[in-house]
Amino acid sequence: MTVLVAVPDSPEGVAALAAAVAEAELLDTDLVAVNLALKPLDTSTIPSTVELTVLERHGKSDRDPADAVLADIQEHRAQRLVIGVKRRSPVGKALLGSISQRLLLESPIPVLAVKINEDRDY
Image 1 (cartoon, rainbow, N blue to C red):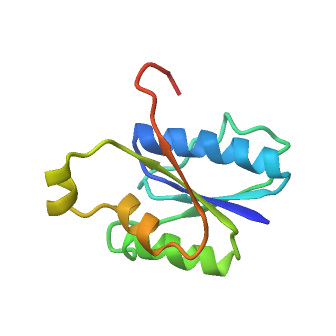
Image 2: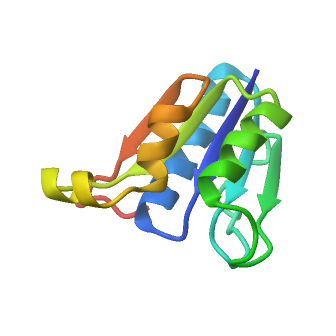
Image 3: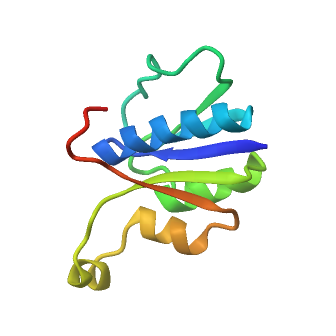
């Protein structure tokens, strides 16, 4: 079993990575992190007991982030997807799409959606 996590450069991404590490440890499996930020992913907090693969994007011209994650699910035969989500108003949901929303709707595997706790430091 492989756990795949989408990690944008945001507090939601940090929370998703932390939850994905816990999920990989719980399931005793490897972790694939899709780095959606355009800077290196900080993996310093990930325990050495977790087998981690980081997939980097190569700039804004790289494929759509949601498409990249969906393709990586297939390529790495992941069985669980972890994403971070943020609260959005009903109008925001209707007018603006999001990577998280697309992944929730289009993922072929179960999705663990992690909402950040604003009182907690990640």
